[in-house]
Length: 548
Image (cartoon, rainbow, N blue to C red; front, side):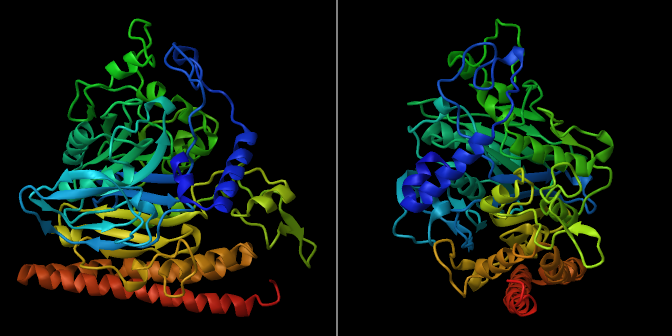
């Protein structure tokens, strides 16, 4: 959520969001700036910003190199943790364009009510390329027909970097890149070209790119008020390692001579010098995050997620949950699967000092002290205040609009090799089903937006209803819900090889037959999960009738 977004919301919603922001601000975080880099709001030994930049604690992305995964996939992910982003998802087809034709660019398309929302705000036009690639179009577009996938987290940055001299915001940049690029490295090159020509007008953003062979972390900011362009840096993640982005800048020292693994905008050093964020004569080594987003390293809500993800992957490192910085990536102690990444996104710090159910106990009929049946990690703010629960921004978020975990695989044709495992709402209560990048459409219920009102035919509401019911009696209900989502996921994982073998055989005969087969399979699997959850809602109302 950016400050400019409040004008798109009703008064009541805006007041509620501002009140929540005030509560978070009142909780405070320790000042962690070091002498070499000045205070959290200042530059590298230079000046302090007039006002602290906005904090963002809204999304998480975990991304893995191909030698860090059990099947050789590269993976990226995105938990789209937002109370305002749209829920409708479509497949935008491959298209060819006449020379000189123009493409419209819009402001915050992630908040539209549908593909042809008449309230969309146009910011400008850019020339179409000769052809644009098919892609899965969510609030933040996910994967294209060449298995190029993108995850996301907003990382803020300094106020003075944001400019209004540009037409491209973060969600639109995602879309434009998936339309035009086949690889992560090509996407970075095109991002540089587009933002130079048309300007990047958003807050700092982290893109986590994955193509069948490489995974990159790309961080971008505006070039400063009134200027057109952007400043950015990107780091390739080693093939046998896994990284995380959690709303804080992660890139520190840049090896600009090693263009195989590190890329940056031409102005990455000069802009920091010109704007007073870094003085090359000071003796302090340039660090990207401390130059452009120093306050992002002070947020415990961001750093704690980094700590937890990396600790789950490599527990022997014994990382400290209070540290200011962590390794950019780690080698996992066992190679990971999609199920492993989903387990990370369902994590709410259970059995740690940061578990929000600690102390929420009751005495059962046997006289034993146990967790209260109503104790859960996703209590609303009123209950946290009443029960004196210290808030934590866990990896798992009840505010998730959706979670995607992607697979990109070099050993398979693109329509089969690229898979998006997608689930709506809270990952802890939701199944994630496969959508292949070669499919022609999404299920009808996934193309209906439910953000601005309840709709019984909207898939998002089927899963959201269950997730909200669970909070009434979490200890018991979550177990009943897990039986349902686990059965759906286990069946999909178990069937994956058989489905892909069949699709590959069809692809060799006729690629279109394979696409139709995968479309039919993806839609039927998703539609069944929606129906299962509509039934689950009824079952929960019946079983817990006297506990409401």
